Image (cartoon, rainbow, N blue to C red; front, side, top):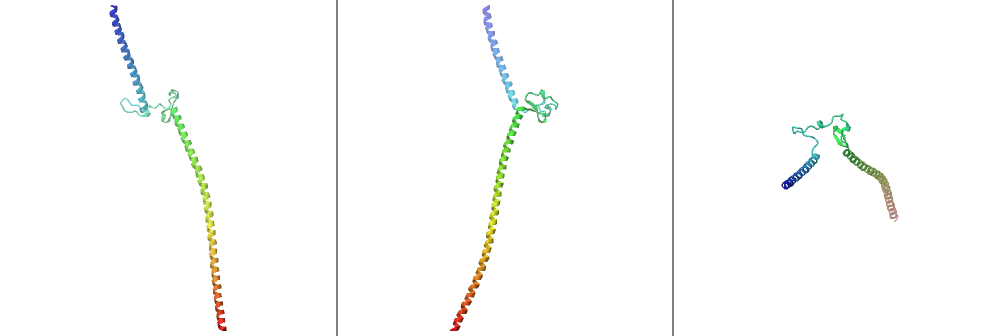
Length: 179
């Protein structure tokens, strides 16, 4: 009889082992399902759906304004519109914003320096332009004065030549008249 119990006992042990393996597989599958549910929940919107399947407004899910900060999870705080925000996320966003502002400040400083340099260059060019204009007006004045002198000398020369011609003609008349 003991022999008949042994095979039955071994069979029961085998059945228990198979059932235990099935239970372990079910537990592992349930853990994986729970893990994938958690992962899925990370990508789902924060607004919950009500019992009727419609989304409940976010303001109904917010804590009341006098909600104690000590009861928040560690690393979370109440932000704008009484929404819970992660302190690390807020800090990293603040750091990024500060870095961006510093980058823009450096860019603005560089542009201001370039603008000042351009203004100095423009001022220098304007001074040069004024100098060139004054030189040109001086040269034009001198040219006009020289033209006036030339025309005056030409008229004097023409008058002298006319007088010389008249004198020569008179001398020729005299010399012809004497003969």
